[in-house]
Length: 122
Ligand SMILES: O=C(O)C(=O)C[C@]1(C(=O)O)C=C[C@@H](O)C=C1
Image 1 (cartoon, rainbow, N blue to C red):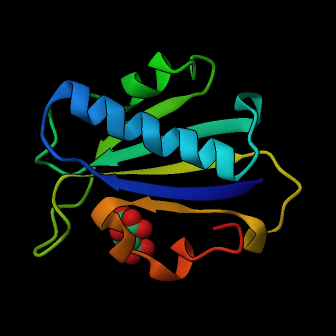
Image 2: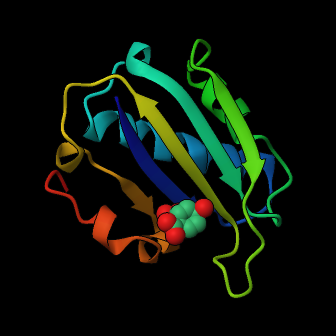
């Protein structure tokens, strides 16, 4: 089992915009890590408090993640933290090693973990 991290910043607090961003992020995580949906044990989302127009989990279901256990929570409201950001942690069944995992940070979230984001698969 491995954890795969992702994050994306969202342009507007609107349901369609949040859905589009979350789906883009999840599709890139799947593609860059050669994931089958059946390998994903769980997806845990957080959204910053300024994003309250949609549940990220609902965006995942819309692209077929129906059998993946999904969970959403609010990100810590830390001073000077990145605004309008959805984060995700995927728990996946894989034989890959930690260093073979491709973490995906899109938009302004690429400043959050430059060490993780620059991956061998990028
Ligand atoms: O990776 C991120 O999304 C971060 O914002 C970095 C970080 C961390 O310090 O490791 C901080 C807060 C998040 O809850 C998760 C991880």
